[in-house]
Image (cartoon, rainbow over the protein chains, first blue to last red):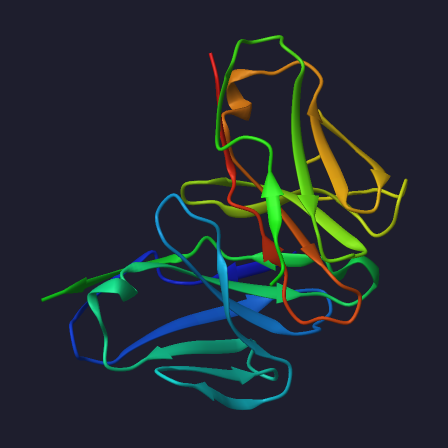
Length: 111
Length: 112
């Protein structure tokens, strides 16, 4: 079957670094996405990995290992506004760009 | 800037009613999607469409149908609303070669 696992909740301190892990088992792989979703709002795109390695974008970095079915999202210099849910999603092969989403990790940033 | 809009942010309907959720995107995207999002379950794909008048079932199509008569508009229809269809409904679109889906603001539907 297809499955994406990520922790349900995490708590971190303002200014710190936090790593959110994601493991996946999917039929076919055509890219892994991370989205940020604030409560009551739509998900917004953070990062996209299709090759192994680290992609850095400002305070956010995302890592992918296809052989291990593993990714992580790294958030540096945490700010209170980073309190949100973070969704890991995997796109399978084939037409329609069908994407499987994890349940999301709710991150709480405390002062 | 890509814009995906949904007809309502909040909707309250009664059991058995026929419900229409509308989604419009203004960037000429071929692919459009309807998801529902429930606590602890993440986004689950209901239906998607890769062209006008084309539709494919997602993971949870039961109780839903869709319509794509124009490229920019993708409608989700609940033929006879039930309480277990109370949820947040998210529409998304993507161009054929783009990397990410763009989401609408969501419709929070309550079925009483």
